[in-house]
Image 1: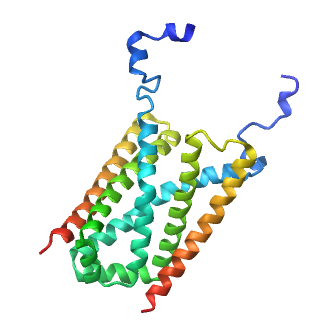
Image 2: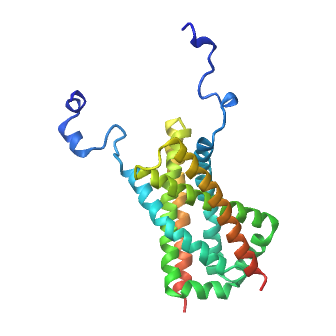
Amino acid sequence: MMTSDQRPLSPHLQVYRWQLTSVLSILHRASGVALSVGTILLVWWLGAAADGPTPYAGMQHFLASWLGLLLLFGWSAALFYHLCNGIRHLWWDSGHGFELSTTYATGWTVVAATAVLTIVAWAAGLSGWRH
Amino acid sequence: MAVQRMRSPLGRALGLGSAKEGVGHWWRQRVTALALVPLTLWFVIAVIGLVGADRAAVVAWVKSPLPALMLVLLLVTTFYHAALGLQVVIEDYIHGEAMRVATLLVMRLLCVVFAVRGILAVLTMALAA
């Protein structure tokens, strides 16, 4: 107990240096929880379409509002992130990619793929909205 | 090995370990994850094609056989995968046993309710005259 008294306890988030690997790990769980709640949007959309024109119009009106678009944007980004990082997890589960340099390379690939997929999906969706 | 002699022959044969469920949860989470990769990609592409569509177009789309099948598979797999993932989060953060069990039950009930609601909506549209 001579040297350990002055040491910070772990985990000690205030002094902990953020790393890509741990941030992506936390984001995987956070996006999973967000998607669990967000998938209610999918059920609401299907339910409104099944129920009739009035419920469907109400849902369309909400989704076209700034709050609806913000929810859809967050939902799509979370979906693409969880999908890409999920594939990274499945690759780990097959016993590959555990070298430190590889975890950073695949981590940044996931970040880039999430951004590209989200932008491409919204560009495709908004261009279809015009007509 | 000493570790193996500590375990009963039945316990070794069942292979369920101290958590009493073996690798079942882990394996189901991976299988549903793998199934969700093509289902999610199909869904995203389909939804982009439906942006701005009115209700009649959505219903007509669901009635064409493949979307109805894919939507039911997507709903079942998504809410199964969500229930498995949320279970781990709840077990990690809720320490009181009564509260943990209650939260797990409510979470699973909600997953089933939303999945059934979604499937009924798809079937209503797919089977309507």
